Every structure is written in C-alpha cells, then in structure tokens.
Length: 382
Ligand code: SF4
Ligand code: SF4
Image (cartoon, rainbow, N blue to C red; front, side):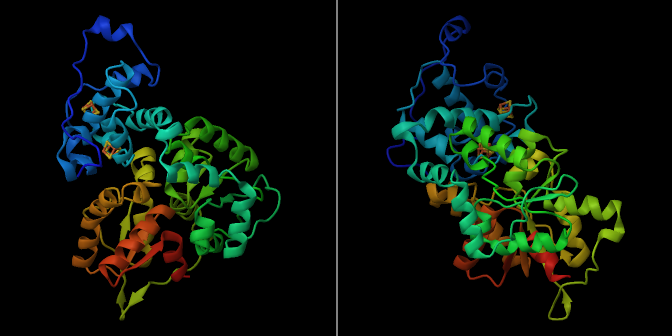
C-alpha cells in the first residue's frame, strides 16, 4: 500500500561514518532520542502499518532510519518517501510498548511532523483542523448549538473540572452530559479551548504545549477528560496527578468511596447481559498505561468480551482517517470482523475520533453493534 509518487523501495543514501554523521546535524530531532534505537526490530510485529505493507519503510525502525537520513542531510523534506511515511504512521505508539531501548517514538514523530508538515508540505486537512480548533468561541458555540453540557462559569477549586473536548462537544454532545450525570459534583468551566493534542500530532507541537498550559490555567485542580487522546496529551503536559481520563477517575473514586457510586443495574439485551467489547484509545493505553479501568467498569454493568485487537489502533488516529482513508479502513477491518464473530451488542470507545471511526466502520459493515462512549454505556445502567 503505497501513496502516489511514493517508491516503497527508494534507496536511502548510505549512512556516513560516525564522524561524518556528527559533522552535520539539521537540529530537527532530539539527538539523544534519535540515537537510542538499536535497530533490533522488536517493534515490527506490533506496528499496524508494517502489518499491512510488510515494507521496512512503513515500520518504526524504518521510519527512524528515514528520520536519521533527514537529520543528517542524506534526504531532504521534499523526498516523497519521507512525506509519505510521515503521514502513513498512525502515531499509535504501540512500538514504544515493546521497545527494549526505550525509544520515545511519539516524541520523534512530533518532531518529524513539526519539520515535515510546514508550508506547502502541510496536509490541507491537518492545516484546516489546526486553524479551526484555535478559535475558542467557535468551539463554545458549536457545543451550545449541539446541546453539550452547559458551562457553569468560573472553576471552583475543590470540584473536579469536566473538560469539553473541542470536537466531541459538537460531534457527540451526549458524552459530556452523560459524564456529568456520573460526576454530579463536577463543574464545567467556561472559556475552555482545545488542549493542543490535535496540534501536537499534526505538526504543531510548540503551539500545542502553549494551548495545554492555557487550558491548565483555565482549570486549576483536577481535570477530567472524556477523550483518551486529550487526557494522555494533557497529562503529559500538566501531570497525570492533575489530569484523569473519565474511566480512571470514576473507578478510582468509586473504589475509594463506594457510597459515591450510583446504583447501576445490569444492561440486558433480549433478557441476557449485553456483550460489550472495549476498543482502547492508543494514546491512553500506550502513552499513559491506562486500559484496565474501562474494562473493570464495563464488567460492573455487562458481560465484558475482550477483543483480540482491542489494543490495536482503530485507524481513526486524529486526522488519519481523512489523510489515509485506505490504510485507515484496512487497520480497522480486523476489529469489525471480531465484533461480528464475537456477537457483540456494544463496542465501547474512549475517544471521540475512535467513536467516529468505529461508528462509520460498523455502518459500512452493516453490523448489529452499537458504538457508545464508556460514559454513555454506564448511563444506560443508571
Ligand atoms: S524496538 Fe526500539 S530499538 Fe528496536 S528497532 Fe524498534 S524502535 Fe529501534
Ligand atoms: S506509532 Fe504506530 S504506526 Fe507509527 S511506527 Fe509506531 S507502531 Fe507503527
């Protein structure tokens, strides 16, 4: 699966000797992170794009080789393979979880796209989304028109703050309302902008970090996010002690204080417990190590069915389904097949982009499966 004008086998000019390589550094990448890869290849079997193409360039190791060629001046950003592979990577970070050298691949990808996706090399969709989510009043109007949870004014320091995702409040406004029913003491501070995760993954990591800091100042104290990708990014910027994904927040609160848990009844389908699969958010699972909590919560209200591909990227990946529609669908297909074979009634998502991707796949495959956010499923049990 190669892009137009992309030669999968285009040779990369040979790596120079150590002294020559050190002589030129473009300064695109953190040299410590870039040099950490020992080319062992342990990451290849977990990479969804490598699984599809079987091409070294589409693997984590191959992409790091390309990054080194860019850094050392052996390739420049006009090279079609570089442009293609910078976009074909899902940014799922599955490669990080198996890497014996601890390569922070996610950081390398951000640095690569910061450089690669500038000027005429910026994918138009990525540029448009980066511009769109900058406009905080437009996000607020979108949420208001679509009926997302109403804001409650200035933040109150002792209350958990519900974060309204920039896309989620317009695309899936019921999610924030369901979250509020489960966290009735949460406030919803006004004036919330985007957390910056979309920028960080689409070539704007410096601006992204500023956006995260601004949002953190707007909501001092505990921030609860219904989007796994946003939670992971914001936790990275502000600290995991301050930022919680809604599933981990609820489970921790309900375990520490069982009286805070509302009565939940089993969710039934045709008189039997509903069969529910969880599809992880990549950034949440691979970046923050959070995946058990959603399963524990589902298990309280339904029959949890573990999907073999639960931890594999769904192909949504921010703007990916728009930038790489063919690969995006190919990556999702095994999950759809498993959902059908396992007789799922519900597929639970932990991230707005995953919800959109799963719902469109379920429609395309005509599956009798409902896609819901975790808090929407829990709301059914109230
Ligand atoms: S597992 Fe880590 S060290 Fe090994 S090739 Fe992949 S990124 Fe490099
Ligand atoms: S982030 Fe995901 S798609 Fe990209 S190289 Fe790593 S495993 Fe492969």
